[in-house]
Length: 303
Image 1 (cartoon, rainbow, N blue to C red):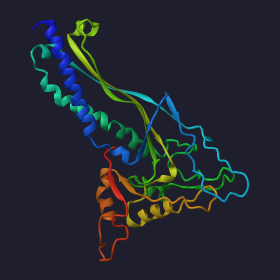
Image 2 (image 1 turned 30 degrees about the horizontal axis):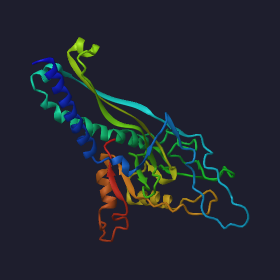
Image 3 (image 1 turned 180 degrees about the vertical axis):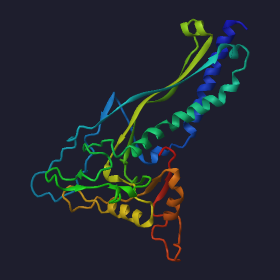
Image 4 (image 1 turned 60 degrees about the vertical axis):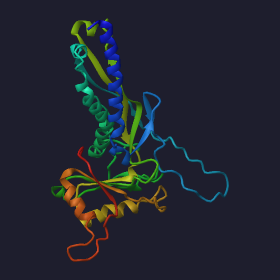
């Protein structure tokens, strides 16, 4: 086949592969959007120092009581991600490239799922990963009053005896515009091609390269909207965490934050226990289950 014809076929195939990629990218439901706010980043990193309690309305008696929304030095730095495949030039010469179409759709699917791993890893690493106040995201010592540093709150529920710790599970309030976690997107995934017959790589290897490139990163949002427990997932322990979250108060120590847990996130190993606590309409005793469908359940394979 003449070189010009091969080049034309490669260009047509690359256009078709891009469509396959987009179909995979746009056809996959992105679980992370249920627990993370998607933020468009415009630089190498984005600061979130404003992530503290949003001021409430107070009676206007004199001058406005101005609140500074950038008191914490917390930023999320964008990372660079890629995925690349190599295809034989001969496959295009022989019109045998159609077999790769499903591969490109799967590449798009993988690109769509890519934030899930990074967002849910934040939950798994929440006992060490720091949030905007300098504390681990899940901590028993979050300061809630910048004046009275002894006024603290906890979003980590653990047994008194460490021997009794079990698999971690999470309760999240996802009802607000800013969710407990953040997915920061700098450059959305896109596919690029190296198929110029005059390029050094194609000339030396007789192969074409297709690569996916993206930039972004995951970060912590409001710790108040999330809680973690390594107590056994039982109705009593679920109630302890649920009630602890809705009882959280603001910086003055007396104004409720109106937290409403919405999602119970568990690893696959806790799926059965989660459904027993939340999805059973009646208890073994025959009484109504007060926790019946009080929250949604997300079984997360990344935990």
